Image (cartoon, rainbow, N blue to C red; front, side, top):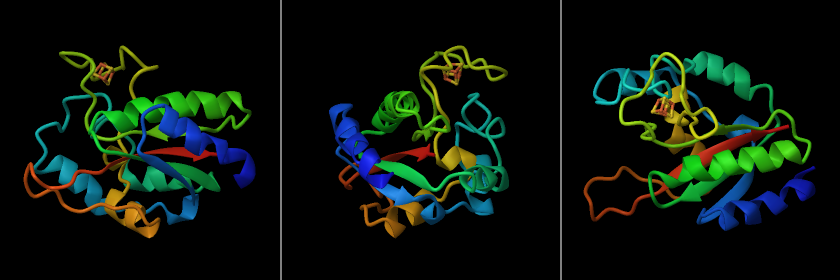
Length: 167
Ligand code: SF4
């Protein structure tokens, strides 16, 4: 299965990713604290259908992850890129027969000037970020050997990630 999926690493790069890696789903970490970082201290809280409190809580996300064996972790350098790349990948992987393919992007959705927080107006173009669903992006990325550090200022190196659960 992994050999068959390796072609999606090249697809990810073709779609604009810097790199991508097939990972075991059980290396994806969730944490109750992640939701708290959205709830307190983030100006995007409750401004989008793709942000808390509208997204699944960490425990629910963990239950979802437990339904999968494999995932594709996608490395990008611009905040808007992971979501665009994983949406395209989700479709390609689904059409290849992996009917459970499920994508998570990065950062808040910025497609509409004002979000319809009750129901997404562009469901084919929007996915929630990993962090908005309670995934500990730092721990997940580090567990899989990709770079990530707290961005302290504009000069700091920036790394952003998306994810596609696959089975
Ligand atoms: S596409 Fe529009 S309606 Fe859907 S989550 Fe994004 S901003 Fe909200």
